[in-house]
Amino acid sequence: MGVSKEAALDFYHACESGKGWSGCAEFCHPGAGFSAQAGALAEMKTLEEYCDWMAGVLTIMPDASYDLKAVGADEENGNVTIFGVFHGTHTADGGPVPPTGKKTESDYVYVADMRDGKVAQVTKIWNDGWAFGQLGWA
Image (cartoon, rainbow, N blue to C red; front, side, top):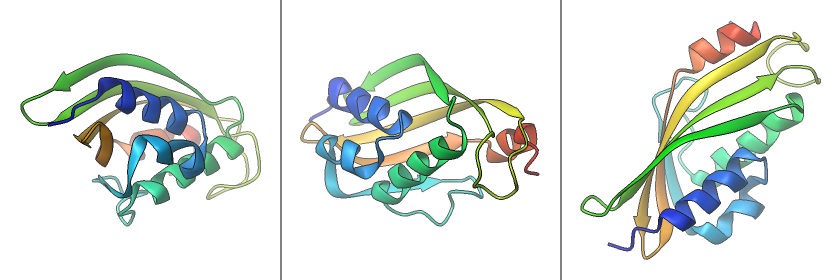
């Protein structure tokens, strides 16, 4: 099925460090899809949109970091699952409200469907309400 844990992790690190689509595209198929059942991301349909959104998040949380907690490759279903924790403090202009100075520590999971060694689709499992509440946005 072309499951590449390495390509999925390369994508993950590029995305989570704010490289945007230009830094993530080499690990993905053109037109790679994206989905999430989180209000902030529900309208996004492409991985390009999501990667560029993440780059924007890092501009309003310049101290942002992430901890990689677990990675699993599922050859039978053709995907790689990545569990991480995002950390950040809203200290810069941008976002839905002026800087709050509040921090978030938010769990999330990516399920990256792989095809021919590249990411074809990512589903993000994330409770945006929890994260936004911690940041004082909700």
